[in-house]
Image (cartoon, rainbow, N blue to C red; front, side):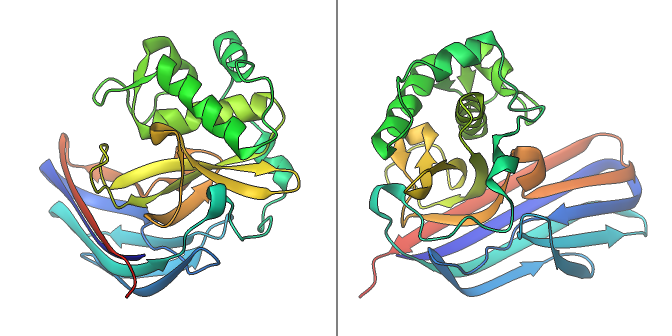
Length: 266
């Protein structure tokens, strides 16, 4: 599928900001499941490009003069390929699988998560992963505005409400509780008639003999050609599209607009 993506982010501050630094994981990479045709980031300053430990494209923006707002404009075009039962054609990757079995602050399993992880007898097949996704959705309804980006999987489960990030963290926590490698994926989805927006989060789960299986927990479906991958990591904190720090500014107003449209190849 041919995806056209536009992502606008603006920060406005109550008072003058004297210094800010932002790390941007807003650039997809070409790989076995997608090819980037064109991509650009417009920012109010020089972007220093590198790769992080997971192989994600990482840009750093430093503004060391007084400013009252920051605007980021991202636009691009990506060709994606269909995946059969979510199976990625990629190999293990640069990070050992064992790294993705380790819990993080956001994905640590408590007793309730361990019980949820055992609600599916086996996690040896792709269909088992969809079944676990359905169990997660029964326990945590999609309801924005209840959790925060700092909320843990355990907190979302206790609240019974969350968003795609929380669903992804719960899947990660359940898989890792059973010793199965799983990684967080940030990116975009061509929404069509599907709810829950164009900026999205899902997971890859490693199954022996199959490789990485890409699963959108929020929709209990395999991630396929309507998805554009931006970054992977152990959780949101290491894959967040934008993270930063600043000196000054007081209160912040954030506005985000994301549009994704798709066309089937001719």
